[in-house]
Length: 238
Image (cartoon, rainbow, N blue to C red; front, side):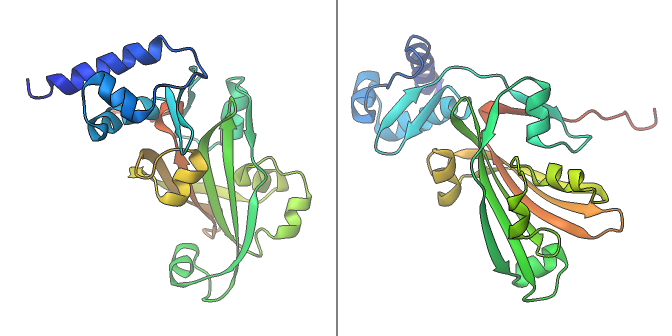
């Protein structure tokens, strides 16, 4: 019973969003809080649910907008595939922003993650994936400079480091990933046009060659409402 007012608020918001045409702006936060009879803090908390479902987008300084539903980007995790490959399979048109390519020197963290000498050259590639004109994923890959260099981006690059390495013929073997829910850091929130602290799905992964060398350390952030990942497992002993 203590949660009933909040549940009612979510029901009322769901009704408002459902009856508002996609692309239209909702009332301002103060006006909407007054209309719903709740505090702005309570309203913000309820709105997060609809944002992570992909039903609304909040834009700093512009307001909150209703968006139309788009197909989920759905994939199993048993086989490593690029987002581009998955999108093509479900006939979903996606685009990648022009990658930001930075040259770095490895520090203590990268030295351990990529198993490279301190101070060795690295390349970091950052880009945003968009679907239906909306940012839905922010992808950051860090690689040793002898694996990928800025001149490689003179070649056609569709935004997928994995596809680039595969098409080049690199002997890739496996990927080890950690999956978690995380609050959006300030930089990531800006890239995905969400609020700082909003819940995102995060993949942190290492990509290995057949010889066991780490050739890529990646951090990928996804808006939960646009992605659905699953794992198929056999029952032990079967």
